[in-house]
Amino acid sequence: MHQWGMVIVQSKKFHNMNDKISSLIPKARVAIKKYMVNNDNKVSSEFKGYISSFGASVIQSGLLPSLSFYTDVSKVKGEATPGQKRNKMLKALLYIISDIGNDPLLFYVMEEACDIANRDNVRMASRSIPYSAFNKDKLDLLEDEIMDAAIALKLALRTFIIDDSK
Image (cartoon, rainbow, N blue to C red):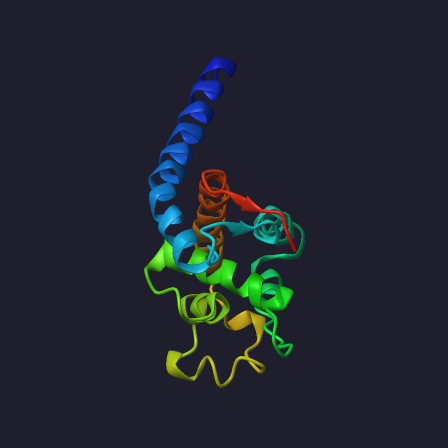
C-alpha cells in the first residue's frame, strides 16, 4: 500500500474517534454537575488530577487494577476522603457510558466482561473469579468506552470553575 493511503486511513480513524468523544462531552457535563460539583457550583481541583492520572493508570496497570484502586472508598469521619472523591469520578464515567451512575464501575465492567454462567453471582464471587473467566474482547471494548468517556470528562471539566481552595 502506498504510504499516503496509510495516512488517510489513520486520519479517518482519528476523525471518527474525535466524533465519538465530541458526542460524549454534553453527557460528561451533566455527569460533572451530578457527581463532582460542590455547593458553590465549582469543581474541586482534585478531580482534575484524578481524571488526568486515570488514563495513564489504565495504560500502565490495566483496566481492572485501575478500577480497583479508584474504587477505594475508605471512610474518614466528617470529611470526604480521596477514595470517595475518586469514586465520584468513576460514577461520572459510568453515567457517561451507561446512564446508571450509582453502581461501582468496577462491578459494571466485571459483570459485562465475565463469561461465567450466572452473572448475578459476579459481585459475591468477585474475589475468586479467575482472570481467565473474563472475555478479553469485551474487556478491550469496555476499556475503549471508558477511556473515551474519561477524555470527554477531562475536556468537559475545562468548562467549569475549578475550586483551588482546600
